[in-house]
Amino acid sequence: RNSVCEISELYLISLIEHKSKVDYNVTVQLLKYMTCIWIEYEKKFGSDYKDQVKTKEFRYPPILPVVYHEGTDTWTAPMHLKDRIFLSDIFEDYIPDFTYCLVNNRDYSKEELLEAGNEMSLIMLLNKIQTKADLSDFLHIPADEINRIVKESPEAVVDIIVMVMQALCTKLNLSRQD
Image 1 (cartoon, one colour):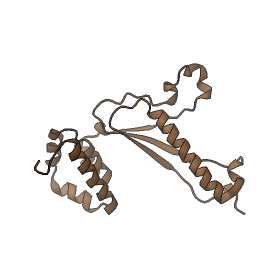
Image 2 (tube, one colour):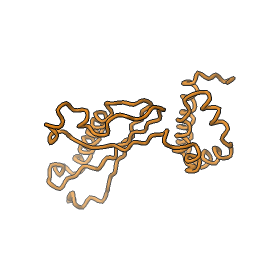
Image 3 (tube, rainbow, N blue to C red):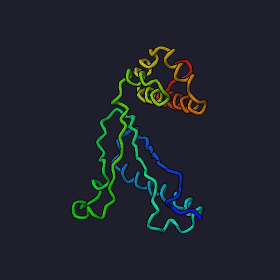
Image 4 (cartoon, rainbow, N blue to C red):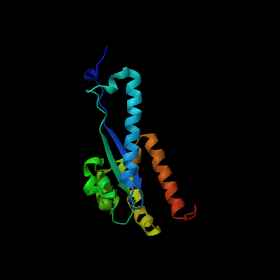
């Protein structure tokens, strides 16, 4: 019979919340998602190991919450849940608290993203396009740099890149002639 201490699998879960505008309720959203993930983990683990989830040794996997902000405005939402709770200074001991990692797309230059040269940097470059002028600037990137990234990418990632481009064209009201 396996015990919790003998489990050989280690889980680290990254939770990525995508935002195009500042969302002051993001910490509550993340807490809700994190709780759902832990509940599902408990169900899966519990089905494999019965009542061990109720033992002292049982641990939930860590979750790394990430907010990916592609907007042009400055991110001003609080990084802690307690900052959204009324009288948090009085009830601080009773409020779950965590922080999230903020990836602010606007903090990365086109050159930095091109230098990274991977699928994520290409998607971040595409997400920088907010106007037709931004698109024109993107189109001046040497095609061989973009082709290299796409060529080395798995097909599923290329499909995502295509969907991002289609959404971008819709957002900018571009037709096939543009």
